[in-house]
Image 1 (cartoon, helix red, strand yellow):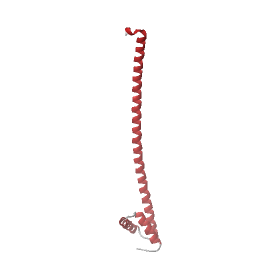
Image 2 (image 1 turned 120 degrees about the horizontal axis):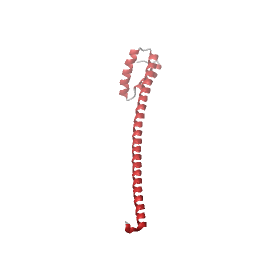
Image 3 (image 1 turned 120 degrees about the vertical axis):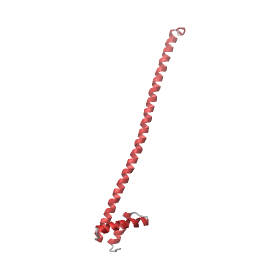
Image 4 (image 1 turned 90 degrees about the vertical axis):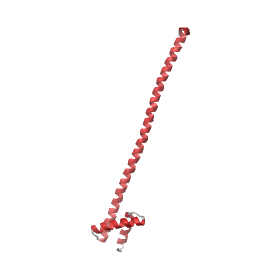
Length: 123
């Protein structure tokens, strides 16, 4: 080192400092990139979980609304026909089987039946 002279020793010292500084900056950059990667992965996981929850919630809401609509339709049929609760329970079971056979929903079948009964027709 002494053979380099004072300017050479100083230059070598500066070069060593720059190498160490650059190495530290590379480690910090690597740490930042790792952190960003984890954040992106967690964001994707949250998005998937959120989507699953939204889909589940919408399905439950849809099922609840369907049951409410079916109950309303069956109640309207009961009002028009004057049938008993027991008779309407039997009708609901029969409507479900018939709707399945026709490839329709029970709600569609009960709405059509309501129209049928409102016109004064009967079984």
